Image (cartoon, rainbow, N blue to C red):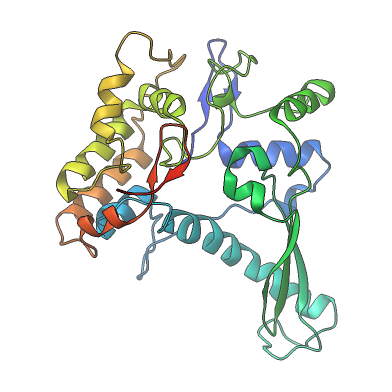
Amino acid sequence: MAEWPDVRDRAGMLHPGAAGMAAAQGRFCGVPADRHLVGAKHTTGATPVVYDLLAYTAAYGRFPRLGTRYCTRQFKEAVEEAAFTPVINRLKVTLGLAGTPRAVKLRRPVRRLKVLGLRAEESRDRAQRPAYRHVHRNGVRHVDEWCPVKDWTKHEVRALHTATGMTHHWTYDSRPGADDWQGTSRSSCSLCFLASRRDLLLGVARRPRLAALIARVEQARGDTFRPDWSMAQLIAWSSRPGAPAPGIVLPDQTPEFAHLEQQVSLALARAPRRLPHLATRLPVIGSDGCAARCC
């Protein structure tokens, strides 16, 4: 539920969410379909089901902060690493580095290059990040990271899409299919604690049921979505004059959303793993999206 879902525009044309857009752009760049991997975090147990970030937050008791970005680690990096484990296991044998996929002693680790579309102007942290760096190594895998468009501006990115005809995610537009880049400034989670105020107001207006569910977690756990803005405040601001028009309002009346609501209810029925007051020691995010020191 954190990601923007598939939607249809006024003409009935389908505009894919994150996974579908990644597949479409991969095909556009000539990446074979069998190279496209889709991963998700699942619960443990005999019958695992998809475990959503908001349900995790409800169980944890605190929302992500700059100092505790468990959303990135648990729902992006760990999922990505797990998705590539079968690929690494096959390459052990294909490259002649081991006789079986489960071998742990290789003649050399399998080398893997992570290519990311992070750009310097998106945040201070990304500006300081090297364009190429080594990130992980053990006896099985050697992982490097490359950000080839780190120094690109958003205007250069948009110009590339215009020149090549490559599609972009629908949330960048004022409405799906508008192709005007007047929507959210980034295509991250629908409601991300690192997003700008305008992007959050758009997200609240576009996904009111999700915003209301986040506000419910806030009230139950006593922690706010951000140290400076609560989701309850953002919901109120989104309906004021001058707030950005959503362009589309998603009903979120799907089995997946019903499953999320059930997960959140079950999590809130139990004691949280962390107390919310400890989060006040972490950095506060200002209205420009940058971190500031707590007083």
